[in-house]
Length: 87
Image 1: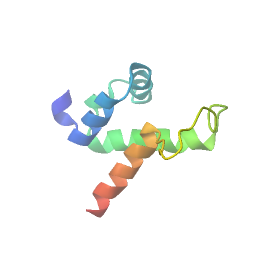
Image 2: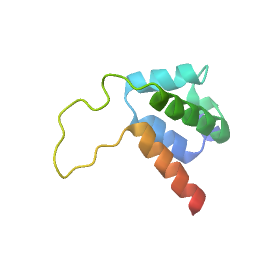
Image 3: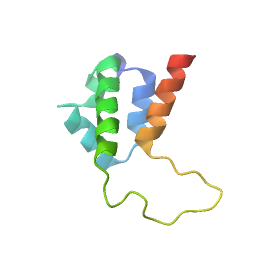
Image 4: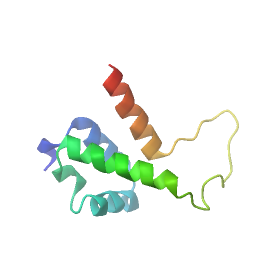
């Protein structure tokens, strides 16, 4: 149910690709959007913290374009949630 979830969680969820949505829903033991905003943020924080405890081969690989900053979706979400707590 979209109405129970905060707009930031909905925007984030709608902005990720299908495999990431499947991973988010699996981590939520259902649909992430069915969780309260607090539960959704807890799940996302747990995923973000766990992802960087166990680096994979894909980290640091790939072609980089000079002058552009590449952000992972979870890092961007964490940054946005931290900013919202400040303001």
